[in-house]
Length: 366
Image (cartoon, rainbow, N blue to C red; front, side, top):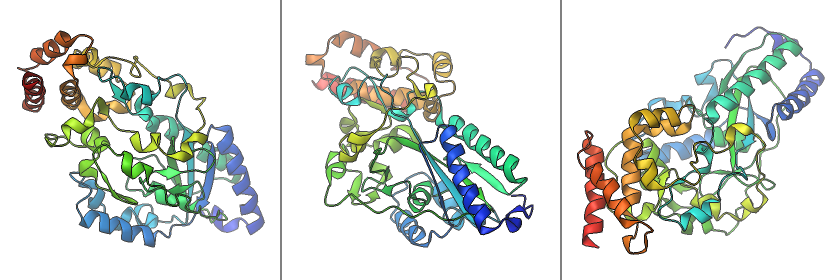
């Protein structure tokens, strides 16, 4: 971070006015809300360490690799005294409802956030524009922009900035707009006035805990990633545990079940961002069709999409499990299911072959 001394020349009144302008500019750039917080995350650091000690991060070694830089912003970006936290809605009315897809085992279910353009690029560009607007107003100042791409406790920061509270499923919740939104941050050396942290409004509700297909929410505010379908289908690169495969249903990239049942999401707002509209029919495509994609097709159709993160073999692995979960007795075209799996029996990836064979064995055992 380049420290220009600008922050030292601004009076409290000027900083207050600047904070209000930043919120106005944020709205103009398409963010639904913007808040400002300090860098004290001591309580959350303790929770993070406990989570890591329990091994709940699974194979995500990067969660521990950065040490305290994740929970101490000034260690990640020296000079940071404030964090500007933003959120942007992503739920689109153009996509087929996830609840409908859960009732259609032969149709692929992709997490709502991944249906459109990669949110990293969308938010990062907007945050950079916000920083540039601040520069035009006050001159050079120290900052760095982050969107889920560095050791940042984004939900903890958003909670402190007043954007919502961390629910029992570990997602951020907002009383007026639910949880279907992305988060981003600007670390800065500007000593802007702080916003009031959000209060928790989960109460006695445990719907998200009961709804988790694999029991990954092992307790209020505790998620064991090793059981989480989002982790298994995106971050995890190995063989999906046998006992969890039947519980995954047709979810091939991520899982939204805990959000689908949350009462606060009755207030969720639909996005107006064209970038988040469904691409390549991923809100309604059949598993058999997606399983037929070649690697070239996968790369072409997922260009600029967060789905790229799972990789082609991960994509095939996930779909093989979903195909194995179809009840052939009630399937519209059972032969198409077994034919698709059989065609991949000799795939060059051992990981794909193993999951394909598992699926075929399930169907042969009927």
